[in-house]
Amino acid sequence: MQRPFLDGPAYNDRKTFVVKCMLSQYLQKLLGKHPAKTKPIIDAERYDTLKSRLQKELFQPVDESKAFFPEEAALIKSIRTETAALNRNNITRTQAYLAFYNRNPEIHWAFLAHMVSRNGGYHMTDLKSSNMTHLLDRAERQKFFLFLERANSAIFADAFPQLLLYEQSKQKELPLRRYLPVFRISRFMAPIWECFIEEPHSPLLTTALIINEQRMLQERILKRTRHGEILRRLDFQLQEYLGFMKVIFPYANKQKGLHSLTGITVERFADPKQRIATGKLLYGLLFQHPVVFRGVGHFTKEIPHTGSREDYWASIYTSDGSTSKVDKIFSPTLHDAWKDQLFFPPHSFDWFTNESFMEDLRSLPIIKKEDLTNEVLENVKQLKTLNEMKAIF
Image (cartoon, rainbow, N blue to C red; front, side):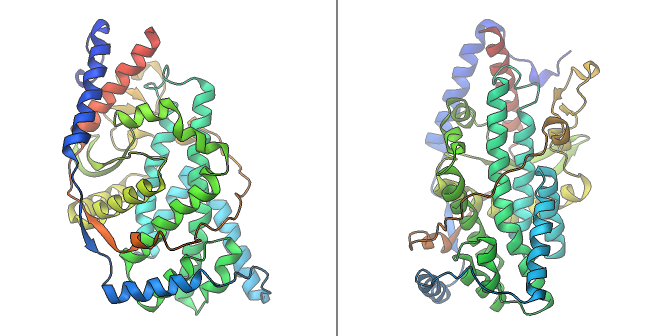
């Protein structure tokens, strides 16, 4: 017997139902979106100073052929080994981000990355959920998974060495500029880290890391590999249009097994500017609202990440695929859904070739917290209906 909120309309009304849902989503986007208010990240004088340093960086030659002392070479090897070990899969990456943040709470980006990585795991296991059995064939699921895994793996491979270098610099003086090129990190980040070490400013560093990782992803993965085509697939766009591509933050335990959710809908994922804007919105949502920050923090301490949506909605989802759980949506753990993947390193093109991205460092949006629990429940219902329609037609 199905749960009441999952019961859809009769089969002969389902096309009408889906059309109404699409129209509703469209009207919300058309009428409900207003330009977000913003606040400056740093004052005008500090921004001008940073901009000048970044402009100078554009004309500095990058020397990747440095000779390192044995102690330095040992540090480089250690960071490479640790990064590779923790980059096995979505579970290990997600845990690594949180562990780093717990040791270094001034690095807000690590906590944001942990929550975004949790969502990445949910999207990976969605491909094997009972709500997607008829929407995608086996080959399409594999392609979507490889795209998600490749993108998230590339971000970790770029970001985590930076985090470990910074952590080392807290223990002893460490010229990050000397090490960053070894890990193929954009020269954009050298002045950013230097400024942070001179005068710590978490919002500025977080924004810079958001920009760097999305620009790196665009330049090294989406532009130069077949994975870029995934973003232009009709099925992907359909899910995005109907509002299924959400990044959610469980922030309150509404009742046993059902957490209240906030978050945002991801739109135009193929556009790097939009991905950067989305990252800034998520950062604001997570750190501007104490109730969200405390609630999400409590959730991460209490609920280890498995990749299954059962983590936050145990009364709706189950990672148990047995027939005794037919009243719930099957949402497998990541370990049960997908095997670990091994990727070759991407090309080391540096995206930072001009000044056009510096304006993104000026401000952050002021975002209002909205409870998305009911909206997400409705999305689950719509997706279930689409899946059942596909089975018929």
